[in-house]
Every structure is written in structure tokens, then in C-alpha cells.
Image 1 (tube, rainbow, N blue to C red):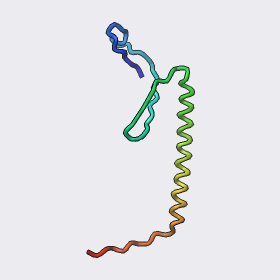
Image 2: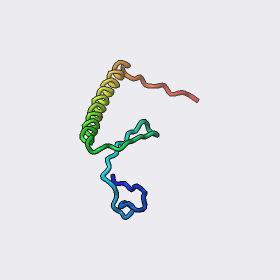
Image 3: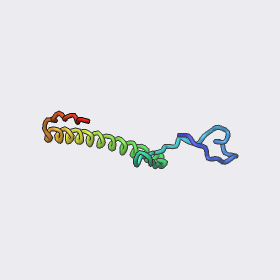
Image 4: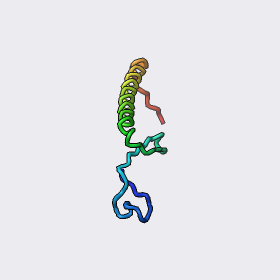
Length: 86
């Protein structure tokens, strides 16, 4: 990401933006996000953390799929519903 600082005499006011600036954005839920800049010396550590998060998330999704299937099997076969008369 390349940024401008807003100072009229700065080089970014002439088109040479500051950067690159690395930014980590996190979704807390569907309507809330937060973020912070990442210092260059921590970039690789943050990338590894993101990769770890994605791996854990994939494993949790697989576990959830297995649990849903176990619950479905425990319920037994579904019976046909009777239609209600008006």
C-alpha cells in the first residue's frame, strides 16, 4: 500500500507516495473490521502467523464437517413429512 500524508510540501503531494506500507486488516465479524500497519522487520513473522491461521481454520472446518456428518448419522434416516390439509 502506498500512502499520502497530507502535508502540502511533501513529495507525496507531487505524486510520489510513501511506501510500501504493509497493513494487516482483521474482520472481527461481518460488520466490524480493525487493522494496523506492520513494520517491515515484522512482515515475515506476520505472514507466517497468517499462514498458520489459515491452516488451523481449514482443520477446524474439516472437524466441523465430520461432526455434522456424525450428528446426521445419529439422527437416523429422515422420515417423509405429511402434508397438512387446509
